[in-house]
Image (cartoon, rainbow, N blue to C red):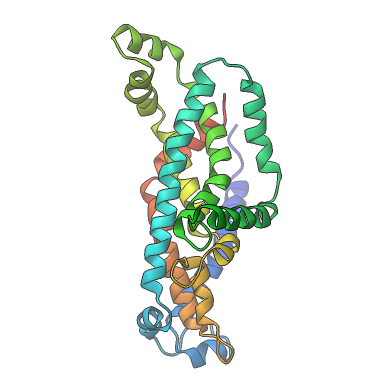
Length: 279
């Protein structure tokens, strides 16, 4: 029996209001980024009295946004690639092979998600400083150290998610590949990985978003040269002024890569999250 028409209209109205509520902050960001600073700091108006693209021009000179953008791309890109590669091999080993300590490994990987990330701030700081003093390898204040930091956050979830996804790929495909002459690596890259593309894409998006928007560790582990976008946005706030229109414009620019990537990979992301949740 079909639901009554009044229920359908009520649901549509509710979803419309909910969508408007969710998009309201985005509208305020876009509107504020197109206003002069005096209009942003003055009386709030829903519609700009004067439109200007000056904030989008000034954001590149107020702070070295281009350098921060490159740093974020390098750090997030490297963390994503490393996380995906390590997670694929680890998850495949757990999914397809039996070895001593397998259950302990999987439980340990999952249990790391129980602890808040801030607990690792001081230990990682001390580890990086001691490694630098002992070996001369500068992890603290470098992009390499930040990449390793983000790997500690993205890897456990990535491994756990891919284990569930690889378990959903029939083992008969592996056996068929071995009959055709493929070794373990051949079966992985020629059969399992192509079948697990949605899950791998979901893991890659998660790892990239984790590194792209992180603030706490980036503010401690970087310096003026290696600073990332999320931390660099603080440069628009000084002791004397807060450039709200530039903050809104820069925030929109920062969100473009993540939003564009999500829209392009949306089909794979949804399929990967759905399939990876069912073992």
